[in-house]
Image (cartoon, rainbow, N blue to C red; front, top):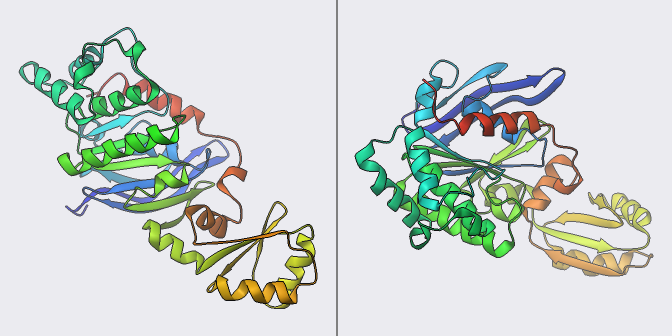
Length: 330
């Protein structure tokens, strides 16, 4: 493993019976990077985290986390990572500080360091004034921030965040990401996160797009958008089939999204007037914009992230939550 990489995976694969949940994926995560896995439920994101955190053994392939092999040095891996689950895992009957103190005991934080570690972790997420408040009184965003603080309590080298803002409103999600950015800048921790929120993925230094167990793209957000090329033009028309045929005759590639027709083209401002002149059918509305990660996913997979199928990762996710709450095993 390169000393500059916190995570390295080679042909990492996991099968559940006939289902290939993760299919021979390879990638590297440099130290200090915020790295995101973007994809729908069932794409293989949580299964990948489960393998990297030693909760599932790979069917094939290998990986190292913080320099430790996930198959041969599981105990060493577990002492160097933190994790925030998709589902809530705090004890609402305890205070914020008590939740962190309990975690400190599980992760063998030295007794004389616990008070300081707890105070610092709460400071990082702006909850120091709520240390003695019961968690049951916290909002969803406050609970998520406390879970992030708990994940950082034992000073991990890599922090795994599985859908860290799932179910939160946009303003709270943005607040969570402000705190995640602060964690990275103050501690240098490497952050590996999963999400199906396109806007959230924009906060990552690099993004791996997962689809049906495969890693289908890997680049910076801007690099991924450049794959789309130029502008995205969305045409609303009562005759989408006729419009698609018209564009095809002009050798202009297009995609359908419901009744809309999408065109990725270098100069949308020049394309639109020509289309209006040459297309005989009715056009109700035309939208012109720069590419987004939604467009990237559609460009690569042929469908939107909201059109993808069911979640096949519940077993992996539940097993991860149950085992990680017990602390590192030796």
